[in-house]
Figure 1: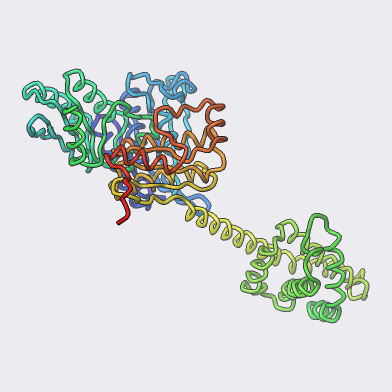
Figure 2 (figure 1 turned 180 degrees about the vertical axis):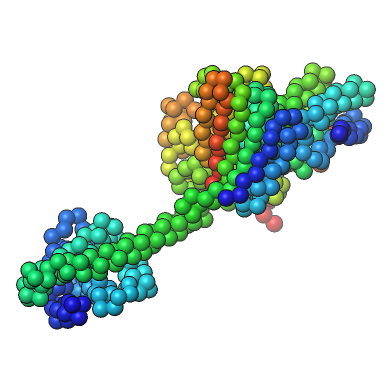
Length: 132
Length: 120
Length: 276
């Protein structure tokens, strides 16, 4: 399946990642609301990488599963990892003093959401949105 | 590359139309520019029109929220106009409610609302 | 050997069908064979038997069209997939039994007949079950579309005022659709006040309330006001009992009261005119 990726190193790469995401979502046939959901989710994930890991990568892939089409976003970094996953998934929690919408927000925007994180070994977040 | 968002003055009101996707730098620059302009012109109200914007993430929402609070501190009222349905839905799903913000469907309604608010 | 089998089956078709119906009637939990009129049972069973035997004499599989027609029918009759499977099992058992009784199958050719049956029944079973699940998926997706069509449309009532009547249970997927229709409608109709009428929503639990609150919040963001109307006494009770906080937005017991409030918010009122 088609797969494209953006390295996240500077703030500008966040813009590049979400633009790529929006184009892919449009091409996959998502409506305007879902396009906004996917773009926003990518922006949040990319920003997390930029803020906490310093650098990493956003990969966007078109996927199918039993007749369903969708878009899978994989955000990966080799940063410090997330020490307390459960805490991060709580609404209102943010380590950067931002609005704290981060992870639970992304989970709500997408259909499937998975985090794998090990201390000092980086974090990989996979989020998928299906076409309904 | 540095882009700046133009801020127009109409009587007591500043009008801002954000025409393209905001990157972080532009958003922060805008915050600074708007506050300076408010100081210069002693404007009583601000209308920020977001009609062309098709997505807002938590960072930009935070900058907007901060701008609104800061403007409030400087004694002016802010109305946000033209938030698209898709943007509203994603903001709500992200858990960003922008509670203390006046909103209106478009610039025209926004100016009406602001003027009524300023008269009151 | 195929020829002998086909001949054997053809000659004893009535007997096979009769026995098959009898066995099927003994199956538990199936209403079809008990409540349907006899001629319909007879007809369906004959079709089934024909379908089952259509591919023995030819090496190629039974025609897809026939299989699809038949499965469409049994899905409509409400046969469960387990029951269809059982029907196939019973049919092949009965045919085997009968051929044994008629001494067409004997100890000498038992093994090759066994193989013949396997080659006959298995592909048939696969295609029938395949057709069945396709038919079932189609039914489900049709129902889903029907349900979506039921979903909420925003009706412009006066200038600046629109109403969305909600009917039926609200699940997450429907809630999303409602939210999208609501917001798109507010923007395109330039509504300043929208009345969300929940008279037709049977249950308002925490989740439904959550969706309604989110919708109202989103309406506020696009620049309009959302009012919740049609709150029946039992709904008010459950909302309070569940500790759901609806203080932040206006609620009214009826659409009528809501409409008056909406007119007030947009600086208008209904005035009676004297008769001429």
